[in-house]
Length: 174
Image (cartoon, rainbow, N blue to C red; front, side, top):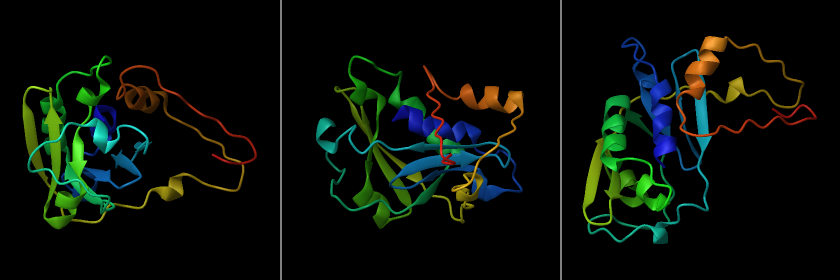
């Protein structure tokens, strides 16, 4: 979704840290960090379904799992722009179809976007490099205390349009 792609706004602009100047895309989530803030947004496997998206010639559809990849911030921003405005009446228009088959095959992530009249295939060149494992910032199995800089929280929340849901779990589960 457009919301998932907009996570890239948190990606670093520091040229000395090229691996975090990208959106990290996996089959389960997208994430970005600037080294101080990190956002991970999980992908809902129920929506959108591939069959909800119109057929677009040149975009293969298979059940092949996506291999994780890094997509440059500037390229993702161009993809977001190509998607147009969010559409609550037809939510599929606020989404891009990622062809796992085509994306796994070459050095590009292959997306299809549509306004139902015009279809576009957009190839985003994948970045090389290794994304840092940020799983460690989510401790498990022990009580968690979090201290945050209010400016960082405001900056992170400004990345989303609409309401943000914050879930707090008990029993030491973050």
